[in-house]
Image: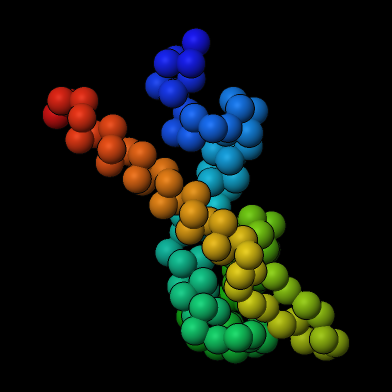
Length: 122
């Protein structure tokens, strides 16, 4: 059983339930980052401590409603956070979740590289 657990989960210290939760979080981050506009927004915000919606909209050549939808997706995934300062909304990178995303992606890619090096597959 222990050997089977190691075969299917990239962190053998975690229970299957914990590993599943990590995989779901990683997939949520990946989905949110799965659009070029969202990557552009993250890149834009990462260069700043904070930014108002208007500045993001001015930077990107797309409609306000489209920017809002992309910001909503990033916020729901936890990659950014927003704060209302009437009448404006201020956004920034959610640093703790960004660090978590970095860790999860790093572990995921590291595990794939280790498995690929030793299994003899094409």
